[in-house]
Length: 463
Ligand code: BGC
Image 1: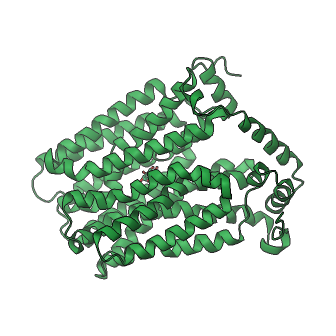
Image 2: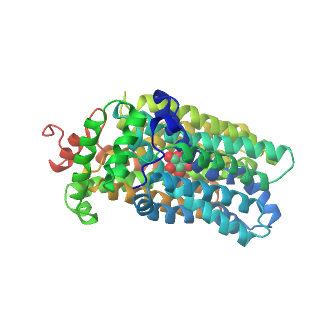
Image 3: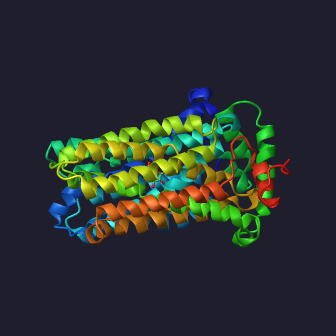
């Protein structure tokens, strides 16, 4: 059994630093998820010139990455369990890096699409592998915070991609270096993961208890007996997993509806028409030059990051429901206003559009952005948690794909105002969905949440 390489003195200089360091390295996977999805926004303005793309081809250029992500989300769990979290993340780092470089040298549109799909595989996989890795190395006292930081890393990645797009647009260097830049965090993730450990939980799942113990000692210091006992208990519970079928039985079925509903509404309110197409929207609103449009987009990216930081604090203070309810209403109002501006305000509406999109992104980042990912990890009973959150995440990528592949065609056929009003309607439906079906999970243990479903959605009876 290969146990060498896990002595505390060999790799990690200080124990207290290590778990934060490990989480930060893994969160580079989240940052790459954000960067590689956001980068298309500014790059699109140049790609459409280089490859003479029609609106339909621009949609394909934007959505190719999502095709990869759907596949990545489907296979990630199996690879992660088979070869381990560390090797999976090393593999993803290689995919991100090689994908970035090949995308950047694409001589034609077909080649570009293939490499965007490859990068998408990495994104879809990273979206589920990184939270699993972090939650399995973090001590329980800081687990929630460290896992939520991954969502923050996603928004930081998006914001960085906007600023990088802006820099290369201003320098007149076009789209290739925008994609190539992702190789830098890709290499950092690879080098960082080389010195990070495999998780104790994965070792334990393979009956490699010596290595599990050694890794626990290395990252958490103290005697790991209690932790090992907990891992043993939860692995036992996982073995009792009854698979997908139980998700459709009454009680749990509603949890599945909530998970998939939040996933779909998170996308159907049109978030990624803004994240991926903001410069295109701004150009339509009168910011003529590519760099002015990308500049406005980068402001939106910063608001997204700042509001996510506020959300991390609020989610455990005022709870998930108030954020979801207020967020869906504010997003709907912003989308109606955006449609009205495009329909009735003549001429240059750039600044007005920017203000409205800032309100919209603020509402999203305080509600559906972080709350969907958080709830998809906490609402399912342990026996079906893995499959429940996998179905939710898969639905999220499919819904994302549907919106992204149709946005430009919709604005071209029914017009921008009606398109935004459709997303506004989705926001209203999301409000009623959350109001009727989504429980408040703030301050509840995972066991209480499990009993809530079992007792016909009653908290009173939950212990
Ligand atoms: C969503 C992504 C979106 C991002 C924006 C995430 O929660 O899943 O689709 O691009 O938020 O910050």
